[in-house]
Image (cartoon, rainbow, N blue to C red; front, side):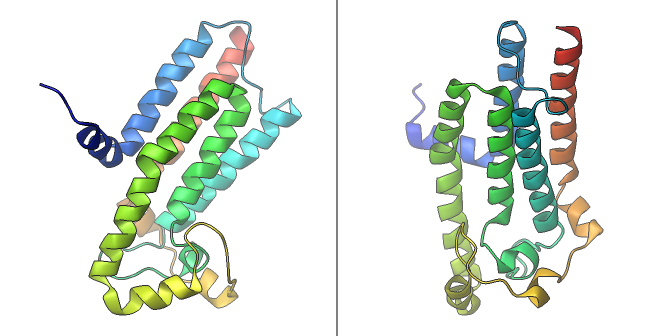
Length: 194
């Protein structure tokens, strides 16, 4: 029974976070056996520290967005959503770039770029179409004032609106923090013992 490319892409899009975490775990295990090519340490190497800053910036942006968004009930336009239509994805991208810098492996960049093309771009398109259907009156105006991925307008009043710890928990953003802490801990253990 052959699985079509479209069906496989649909599964990847739906399970994108689990797929990304699985790829990271497999990659970490693979790299741990390559004793000649350790990732940069983020606490005593400048490039590793720059990667760590990308990771933390992405994680904080994701947390900011997750604490503001009310999915499918109202069009979220405050907080980071006043700057970009997809701050969760931008946060994920920054986080991923940070890990690519830390791991200093060109093959990882190819994997990440492939995942962005195969999983995240179709998901962004799907979400934009869905939001346009759910919020037809607000969507066009929102698109005129915000960009998909690049910042257009900065209005302080909109930036400071609506963050809530209960929304952050409801959106299960703590999972991203747990995953990042685990990966960074493994990297540090790797530097200490290998």
